[in-house]
Image (cartoon, rainbow, N blue to C red):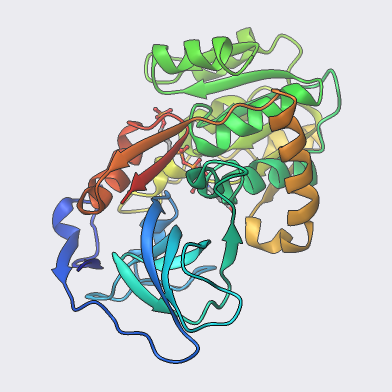
Amino acid sequence: MKAIQLNSRPVGVPQLSDFKLVTEEQPKIKAGEMLLKASYLSVDPYLRGRMMEGKSYIAPFELNETMSSGMIAEVVESNLEGFSKGDFVSGMLEWKEYQASKGEELMKVDGQRAPLSSYLGVLGMTGLTAYLGLTEIGKPKAGETVVVSGAAGAVGSVVGQIAKALGCRVVGIAGSDEKVEELKSNYGFDAGINYKTTENMTKAIAEACPEGVDVYFDNVGGEISDGVMMNVNQFARVIVCGAISMYNATSMPMGPRLDSILIKNSVLKQGFIVFNYAEKYGEAMSHIAKWLQEGKLKSTETIVEGFENTPQAFIDLFEGKNKGKMIVKI
Ligand code: NDP
């Protein structure tokens, strides 16, 4: 069976050579264990940080270590009470076709209730991040203007739709005309901006947000965010959820200081990590499930077939090749 390890620490944009596909023997399970067969695997921008050395909110991968991320797996053999052959589980698992598990921190998921892949997307970390970041920090009120960057991606597309469900005016920023069109036609955004063809982001935001920006859900950082910040209203809230435009930077870019804008407008700008809100996951999921049922929330997935294509799927996140959640089907 195959596994994928970290071969080298990327410098700049990750390369296929930073990963290593290895063959290992299929594990045999002991008492108190079950054998899992990988079904779906989540590739996420934050894994770029884990490929680097250094302290973060989650430990880095070691060289020649099997990588891991959120996965859905099928129980194919079980010596573990509570888990039977044919069950599906979700949790942080290793990038291996088969693995033995004691079931720790795994949750059973029901493929009859929702497509299995959605537990990695809208019914998983993606949905939780969107809902909790927006409501806990952004606290949007009906009628306010919400701007979201990375808007056609997994988290961003859900953020925009939730903001619409809460009665806000929503403007999305994404990397192609096709994506911008879909923000409006598919997800009901009020306006969209293609950052790749926009020369002056400050002006583009001002035009798309005539009443200014009350909430900014930031997935990308950098110059796109500078343009949004130049348009914030008094008491605006800024959720710093991701900074993908800087994940491949070899040195931290130091841009113009925007502190005076924060002061002048009494803006709240707060970093967000979904794992710090675990006690609110239940509440978040009940809202998300309701909006899905009511048709107010659409979930989009880009499914790449084949375990060995996992590294390329991950790299493609930095090229914007995904629409919605990028998932590998194994
Ligand atoms: P996405 O599905 O949004 O995929 C990444 C997207 O980022 C791409 O589709 C691409 O879209 C865009 N992108 C890539 N490079 C750049 C760039 N240089 N500048 C601007 N946009 C770029 O990923 P997720 O929804 O999973 O994650 C979105 C963000 O949220 C990430 O920054 C991630 O790290 C963060 N995150 C944070 C969490 C937390 O708890 N803090 C939890 C989950 C995610 P395009 O075509 O528009 O360029």
